[in-house]
Image (cartoon, rainbow, N blue to C red; front, side):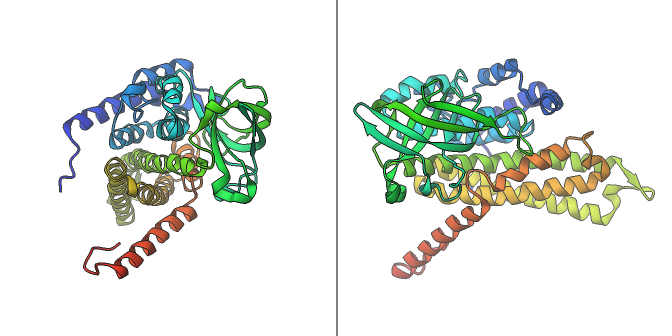
Amino acid sequence: MDFRLPPDLVAWQRQVRDFVERELQPHDDDIERTGTVPKVLLQRIAEQGLFGTNTPRDYGGLGMSMLGSCLAIEELARAHAAFYYLCGVNVHIGSKAIELDGSEAQKRRWLPALALGQVIAALALTEPDSGSDAASIATTARRDGDAYVLNGHKIYITNAAEAGLFTVFATLDRDAGARGMTAFVVEAGTRGLEVGRAIEMAAGRGASHCEVILRDCRVPVENRIGAEGQGFASAMRCLDAGRVHWGAYCVGAARRLLELAMRRASQRRQFGRTLREHQGIEWTIADMVASLHAARLVAYEAAWRYDHEPAGRSLGGALSKLIGADMVFRIADQTLQIFGGSGYSKDQPIERIWREVRVVSILDGTSEMMRRIIARQAFQGLDSLAATDRSAPWP
């Protein structure tokens, strides 16, 4: 088993790393202060292809493997989180439903503009009373001739204020649960679609998280993604991709934190010695290195599995996001501790990153939901093993 990245992906990773460090990181403080990402930076990100890393070449993207996409996300995570929300989320949940389940006409119509960064997409799934239990959404869709009429209230919709189109999930029959859920593409400016208030979050300035309100919003039948009742499956496929990307994001953010912690431990002197010469700090750094290494292996394996074993995408994404979210917040907390009061101040980027990574255990499926997915698949493996070949590896 060869754990080395192929030369083309090594070169790609270095290219993105150089771009992030040279052109994006210098703007981190200004974005945090102003809450705005300069349009020129979004244009530069688009020129690098980062709005469409995993989008097929036939539809305007780079056509990279999921592993190649994750390597880009890993590097992007070294800069302000707004950059990832605006382009990384566009790759995995913003455009994924169209890519995976859309008609050929829908792909030709919308994917090129999304992949080129000309349009940003938002996935409108979460509602005030429907978070982890996505099948319980209250937004309704009613067929009316050659259109559907949508009514409902979405919340915490990332990129809603910037979005040129929305993937909206609604139900044709609330009593049918997941079987009634259907997905639609709704373009910004459609009558009856309103982007409501922007919700101020603990972190992520520079990207929006808004309410989206639908009032008798008429959507043409040709904007339906897939068949009626297939929306839940489509949403889960989007989230599988998102979770793999979030695992890579955690690796990149943690690597930056570890570098900051190691430099601090090498430069800061206490009691006549550098911090790195104190065994307590040395062991803390060792634990950080070990947990980051383990999470990186899981993240890369999840990306490989996404590319080569479609049946394993859900488990791989759940493992990577669960392990990555726990790892990166722990490393953020340990880094802040090593910096002490300086780390808690806004003079350093640590407190901002600490806030940014806390949400990973919540969005795109909470850590509790990741554990549920993992446990269910583990028990399925055990049941299958009991019924067939007991000599097969498990889990």
